Length: 173
Image 1 (cartoon, rainbow, N blue to C red):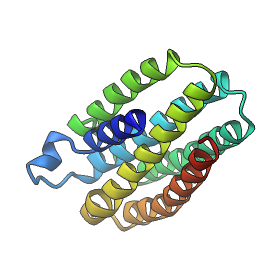
Image 2: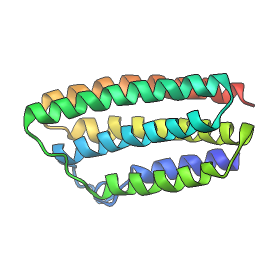
Image 3: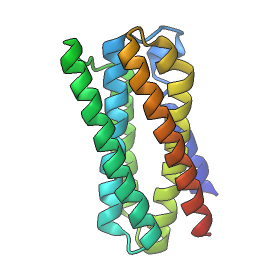
């Protein structure tokens, strides 16, 4: 329970960067960087899981995360090139990266079922936080229609990831 709660708190804090906390609307270049960073983070977490787990369900979930997040990030990179937009690093993407690195360090110390449960609990919390940020901040703030469309597509994929993670988490109890 503590692991799940701490994962949820960490995930929510990831996406509540100071710019958003003060009510500032992120720009399209900032949104692009945040979305891309969120995908890179989940790929790194999934690759860590693939190295550490022996659980078939956790492995299959992690493989899905790598495949789907790399595909969406490729689409995002193609879009920013097409639009001639340079993604802009910002407090939110920096916080995301730092917290994710801390979480990977924490997970690296775990083994077996303990790792599997902590990884999947973090994935549930992380996807909830990303889905919420997409719905409440990133999609409504996006000015470019193509960026908004890509974020909406990403949201549908990530909502599926959240459900998949919840299913895997339930199987690990």
